[in-house]
Image (tube, rainbow, N blue to C red; front, top):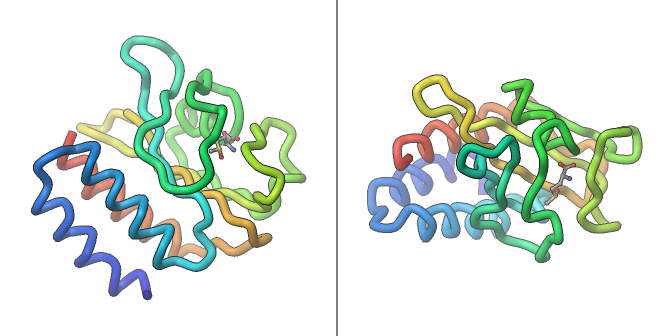
Length: 150
Ligand code: SME
């Protein structure tokens, strides 16, 4: 399914939402199922007042990394940079937290509510260098839609 096909499906899931976590789970399931190069899809959120991220709903292999300190790994860096982080080849990154040996690349896009970075969507891919500007624009759209639930 193309990103343009998926956008109205995301909009509908948000419009029909009765439970935030359930809706986030359905979004993870949809993206993992419909986008061939998305092999793990999950949300991390700032954990209360702590300078750390806590894993929220996800679709894919369970990860040990349910808590990630700010600054650590790709996710922790995005928590402080407020910028998209596209990693074409995880082997080339020093500050990277490996979740599975099959993962080759990663993209993390921050989620803003009222201009504040409150979390992120994290995608792992088993393909090297699969992400383009279209992934970034699509995931920014997903994060903007999810922000309306927060
Ligand atoms: N690789 C991430 C850790 C989270 S897993 O991808 C689920 C990172 O370096 O922050």
